[in-house]
Length: 155
Image (cartoon, rainbow, N blue to C red; front, side):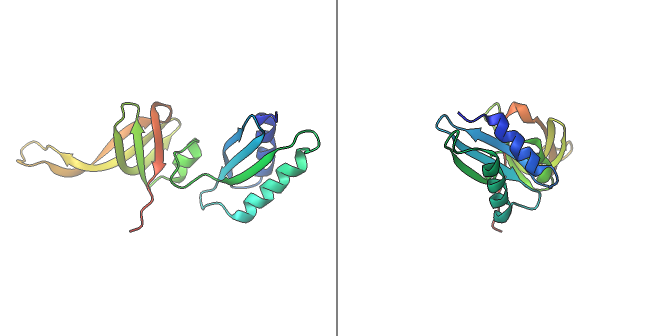
């Protein structure tokens, strides 16, 4: 079986002088390799082809046959690495908390493992008869949520 860490090292060599970042490397028991990369401005197909060729030049099909798939992290897929959170600051996201509660709002900030989502919601204000719509910050930790993903809007 092909070593996942070896593939990860090869990918990191290719990424060294680029603004891309590694999202994930998966190697299945039948040697299907899936590499996901991302970039703040999106991923170009030519760069996926270049990375694929780079990996193929460094892995020997004579030693072990494999299937290779190189692509971008899916737009509507859950975030896997902190850089994806950073790239989505100011954009709409959906967070599924460990308690099963969904929160939809705008990703306000990221600091290490912590992130804040601003939600426009009704809040009871002292002295007012009816709840008022206000921006409320909700704090989360990346390792304490089931998922966070970018909300695609066609408006």
